[in-house]
Amino acid sequence: QQPVQSPQAVILREGEDAVINCSSSKALYSVHWYRQKHGEAPVFLMILLKGGEQKGHDKISASFNEKKQQSSLYLTASQLSYSGTYFCGTERPGYSTLTFGKGTMLLVSP
Amino acid sequence: EAGVAQSPRYKIIEKRQSVAFWCNPISGHATLYWYQQILGQGPKLLIQFQNNGVVDDSQLPKDRFSAERLKGVDSTLKIQPAKLEDSAVYLCASRGRNYGYTFGSGTRLTVV
Image (cartoon, rainbow over all chains, first blue to last red; front, side, top):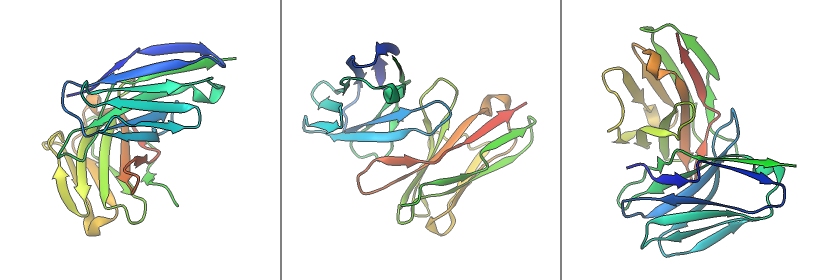
């Protein structure tokens, strides 16, 4: 079942923060986050395995609450290069495939 | 390391014609995926290979789509006959040690 992402779209000014959420109705083994720019392939940002860990990637970090089957992506002090569509991909225990959400479009303006 | 290679980059065909896409994953990556991405949506899994064996093809429309991965390296995805609703970007991905997917640039298919 497809995970639900929110919000659908975010418009920020450079330097502002944003949070993107991803939730699933199924038990999860891991959550992936990807960023896709227009006309390009999705690029892997990070993976979170069950255990409630939080990871960071420059000024982008994420958390995974396995009890709630929810993950959040945090973008701090956004830069113009952060613009794009962010997808979460969820992996269920016993499976090795990802089901992607519909995406959250992020636009960072000067 | 070299990325995931896909070709062609673009393809325009008429409905009922056939088309094939090619993918070469990152060297040493045993797992290969084909995803379909319709404009404005997230990628949708079509098929997963582990080496040259199919692991999951439950979402592959087998009446018109077929895929193979000979010798556990390159893979080909075929559509025959194509329908208008097959217009999409077809993404190939392979999975490495950090468990993240590396996607190829994709093939943008337009069926007219």
